[in-house]
Amino acid sequence: MDMFFAGVELLRYPELRGEAIVVGGRSVHTPQRQPDGSLKCARLRDYTGRGVVTTSTYEARALGVFSAMGLMKSAQLAPDAILLPSDFESYRHYSRLFKAAVASITPVIENRGIDEIYIDLSAHQEDNLSLARRLKAAIFEATGLTCSIGIAANKLLAKIASDLDKPDGISIIDADNFETRIWPLAARKVNGIGPKAARKLEQLGIHTIADLAAAEQTLLQEHFGLSYARWLEDVAQGRDDRPLSTHSTPKSMSRETTFERDMHAKQDKARLSTVFTDLCQRVADDLQRKGYLGRTVGIKIKYHDFRTATRDLSLPKPTNDPALIRKAAGACLKRLPLDQRFRLLGVRVSALSSAEESADRVPEQGRLFES
Image (cartoon, rainbow, N blue to C red; front, side):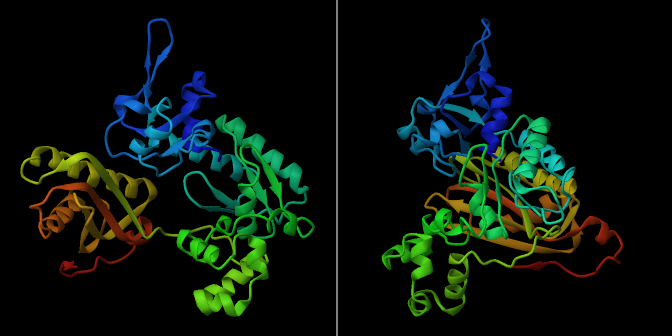
């Protein structure tokens, strides 16, 4: 989906189209409708705190503002950009709508998150371009939002292709245009080549996918090891044999919050108790909504100096009950040093299983296992 979160916000505030918009503020940044019908919007220059950019419009990206960037840093680049709060309930709603629209045409889908999917088109007799246009039309009719589609022989190339002609694009990669469209791209465009690997490749003089295809295998093995070197050789040639995974159990679900100021366990006890309970409730809601139970509850704290500490506790049987999650998370919290101020607090539930499968099992007996 194209700038998905920002796109959903523009459905709500269509008069803001064409503006540099950053999504990631708090509820206090919600636009206010004035008596004359105009919108009074918060500006990025007025933001103070530790929040990060959830997404931005293409106009804001042109100013250097991208996802995961700190809002304070973003304000230096685009002080006049409009700041909107995130509304993940709306984003999940539109995610369900766009995926249902796709499923009405082709049901073999691999979910890759709230705004991205892989789909298998091999059973369709329709030509690729017509099918892509039909998918885009169905998504737009269901959501009012645009998407970009990449079509190729495998997931590796389809992922790259989906970014080539954003926004609202269609890119088809085949044997005839693979070298002209894929090889000139930066090596970091390959999903799986992260920032560290990209920097190392650049140090070796390998900047593009074409450079990677021409690199000596012995050089790659020397710097990346045999397994990763072979993978680099495959991706440079566009080879990828991964099948679509149409069903998977997530490893964990978590919720966390970064505070606007450093918190202290004693001095901010009342507020922290409310926040902590809310995090546990939200994780439980996520589990219940998606039909999962979790066996292990954990917490995460990031101290004022950015040190991070975690604690986990395994339950006798899996749960998605917010009260049980709150009790286990509280037990974890007591095992952490809380004499220093901290900036982030998170709750995680892992070792997940399907609620339906768990209902058919005989409950396990056992004690709590801590780590």
